[in-house]
Length: 123
Image 1 (cartoon, helix red, strand yellow):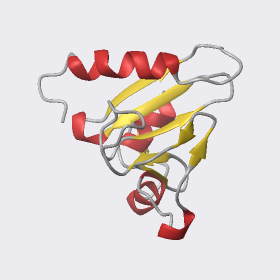
Image 2 (cartoon, helix red, strand yellow):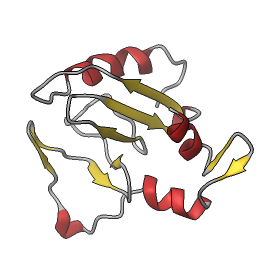
Image 3 (tube, rainbow, N blue to C red):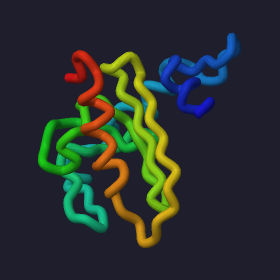
């Protein structure tokens, strides 16, 4: 969580700078060329998802993870752990720590509409 707080703060945490803002931008914005698409996962093509130098990045509204927000950056762990950060929602950070094998998106996809639905203006 501290790492995500540092990234969402542009590279600083607790009064100390760890990364340049330019480095954070490279990490949290899609850097893939068009020929790298489509991106595949165990559940099919991840339409609307690219990758920065450290995170998956939501690039468009699509049926893949329909409750995700454009600009959201995230990562999924091997045992179905997930986190995402929504810059458009005051850098909202959500971390889930379930341990489910084989990997699935069930918890993140069930939680995301509840979290965003609780916000006054989530789009």
